[in-house]
Length: 147
Image (cartoon, rainbow, N blue to C red):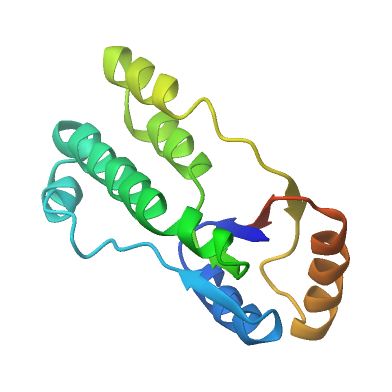
């Protein structure tokens, strides 16, 4: 089982992944944002560095997924990730335009998932019950979107 958690910054994606990890005897895959060399430039000049910043994130997540996801799932372990590729498309819509937007939209267009809407203010027990019920009925990839 592979569960990807989606949501805005600070909503609790990593916290939720860590909360669910022991309950499902799962591995955890966290986004590595500290390695992006364009991030500080992006915060200083969004228009100029948005594309470079997001391409780095996209490729970083792709390589992280390629190196680890298949191996973990093939071993029979469960996996929780605190990001989805859908956030790349959202970033593109907010920060890019023209050819850069078209390119990133094309790169982000093939990302199958099941979305489970939740609330940013969640009760852990209720959420765990809801997620467990949904995970049981899901076959492969589940995306949990926190609002």
